[in-house]
Image 1 (cartoon, one colour):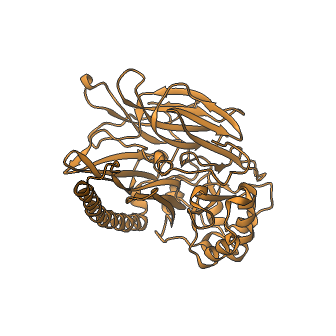
Image 2 (cartoon, one colour; image 1 turned 60 degrees about the vertical axis):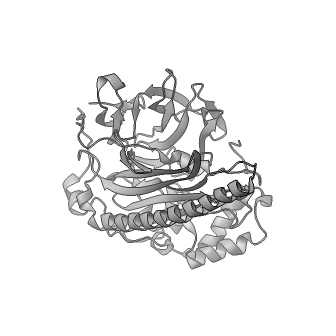
Image 3 (cartoon, one colour; image 1 turned 90 degrees about the horizontal axis):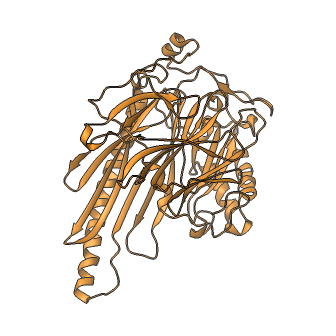
Length: 467
């Protein structure tokens, strides 16, 4: 895979890359949380509680290059996800499988993250989103089960010798920003219904945390009409010119001005996404344009460009992600990419590559930035290092030119205990949104009882610090 430079036209993206970052995790209702010994100091905490944790700023033309709008008082919100896994068999043949994801507000212990009770409008907006997803998943499940069974029976009738490939329908989310100002996540979807290849796409979901209102481009940008040229230039800087259809410029312009473009709002910038066949062929994959706040401070409205000093961002697999490691306001993007090569975690930072020699699978990476300038990647994964598969957390440092390992812990964001309902199994996960307060499960050996939930923070060495 490529780590830097322009991405080639044949830089293919498998459906799996959209869903590998899905399995962050979550603990059990009845377990006890460990209390951290040191509390997190938040300026003007009471005042922020009264205002919902975010200050109001008048829209301006922004600051000149060389400054970065970071709000040290902006607090994170807690989130969790529930993923439903459904597998249907006909006789001994796997007919169809599906994953669907719902997103919920959750609470920490109140030291750093804000309580969900502060955001009733956002809770309502998420419930509407979850309701639509349940309805969409149910419809797809019924249709695809019928289609798959019809194909399988036709094969049996005609004695077709070629292998039957199970149909699938996937839906998952990657959280890009979750604070008292904005919630933004990327909704990944993919499906296969008997063809040369499956199809996949992403959809950006952006909400004002206070009001639950779905954000439009005009809410975040001073002048939407100026965006097409900025995005087109960034796409041409990032990818080989052969990547695009001839209609790329007109398609980008139309999608921006009509408001149909998919985008997410991060703590340090905005990313625009173009799905397969939108501006390039299937082999080009999902094409992205990252615009950091301090690259073009004058085009963003003050309210939404003031990200938290410490934050987390869930990462896709094998896609370049533009991040800001230094917070120096100089408009320099760092390019981060993570994936697995023959079962080994590979991290590429600005073209410098690190490979973990201990094999894993099912990785779910999170970029972690702290207000003191330190940066890490937390990877929830499955390992069989001791002859038995188990979940574990791997932590990597981004504080030198070449990434490096910080430690491996027998902890996971996956919650202990599964809910089984017929062909469907539901598993809940914590989502890491705040480096100063997040939950993890400690998985005990099967002969030593249940796992334990801990409330932790990123410690001085990068790994979680326990109370």
